[in-house]
Image (cartoon, rainbow, N blue to C red):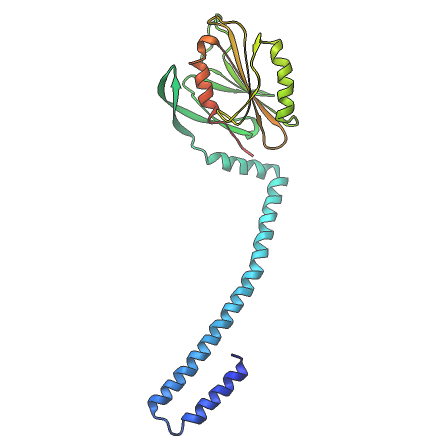
Length: 251
């Protein structure tokens, strides 16, 4: 109802009923008029709120875009954001892993990779993470005796090499280091990516490797290389597997 129409209706109601109506009827008329005015007021207020909302939403979008631009261009701010994301992970937790056929409850500690590109939980009772210039290495907390082959898990990022290209390179390299190399397979556990496996010999101390290639979600790859010996497959091998299940890339 327009304001002009409302004015006419008010006049009509007053002229038709004021002179001969009782007080009760007058009250009813004025209540009816007041209700009409109130509804009209509410309708206009809703329209104004809707207009304000339509103006505010683009502002929110613009602010969000500005924040994203800031994070992508300011190194310190970007690293701070990464730290906040990392802080969302529990600093310590307990996992269940199968060691030599027996479930074992193990306390693990959160560790971050070089430049905070990934996080992983480590069984610090048995292992330590050593950060290097080009890669990080998880190895035994106490050095092994010389009679044992190397036990380690190296995590290295190749920013400009895709997982598929990396797999092709490793398929050529691995046979030069191990006498038996199995066919590359796609895996979803302990990580999502590709797995290559190599072994030399069948003795207790025969060196074994598992190499996992994982996308870094930015056109490059993480290469995770496990090294242990045959007798340790259900020990160190199983523990490495459990740790890798906790591997997470931090964008």
